[in-house]
Image (cartoon, rainbow, N blue to C red; front, side, top):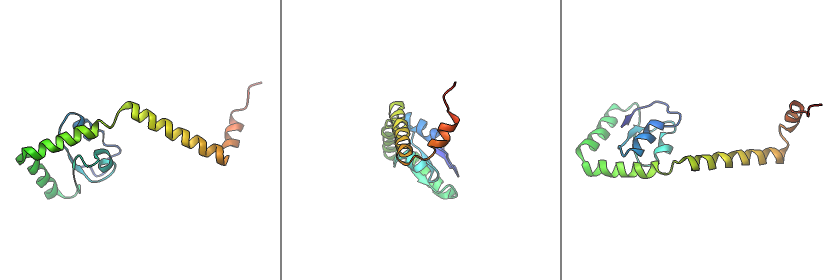
Length: 117
């Protein structure tokens, strides 16, 4: 899978490819380096020659392609709905705790959520 994106919000296409065991060549921008976690060949999206070389290596070196596919499968396995829900829960908990500790925003919330008479 090749994704020469100039700006990728999350990188779902590469995550889907990795979860299917498809080696990935992607740009080194946006969220792609974090999402791929070293399991993909990352290239500057403005470097056409760099992309060509990375693609050529995958096509001409089966052992390299297999190692990239295995790395992608392992990386994709770290993205589960359970882990996502846990991280989201923790983030909301931390935000709530910060708000409680500082009192920031509480007066606005209380003013807009008065008990009904």
